[in-house]
Image (cartoon, rainbow, N blue to C red; front, side, top):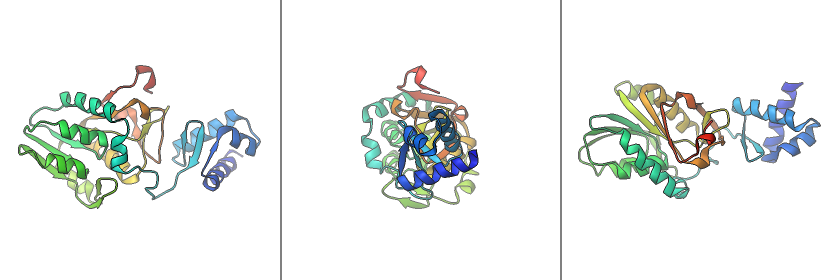
Length: 239
């Protein structure tokens, strides 16, 4: 019964784009509590996305739900810039760090002093910014450039990382849900972050408070995999 209901929910969401918990309960003829449990399980399985009392099906292999880089940069700009400034304290001369393609990491790159460092990134804007620094050794992930989103996609990433020992991976994500799971809107970025989390000695997640209790298209991994967190969120907001 539950399996059939789950399949029905995914079908309904695919047909309707999004539905509220109340609407699903009425259509299925079950309680809202049952629907909430179903949605929670489907979200953990990566079939749906939940946000603000609504749910929608995840569209596979599309970037439709990923905001362009310039749009992400404008969102919560002041908070992100402040969070990036605090992250500078974690970076010392001689380190090898990795930066993701988030707008917060670009703001960090802008504030990064010209000191002896090795920086590995899949971000085109970060490459453009750090290319101006003479003392920083810059390594791009390379691959195909997704111009609208500001990052490179490289199928050979795993082989490339075998030659690097990364001291600190600094990144952001689309959201962390109530269960403490990190999410991103795009599979390429999610895989990049998941891989770097495993390959780095330490990790630093940069997140403004708007991203807590949110999910997205693709699961990155549990928040417990992250070594440190910098955020403007109150402690009770963090799962």
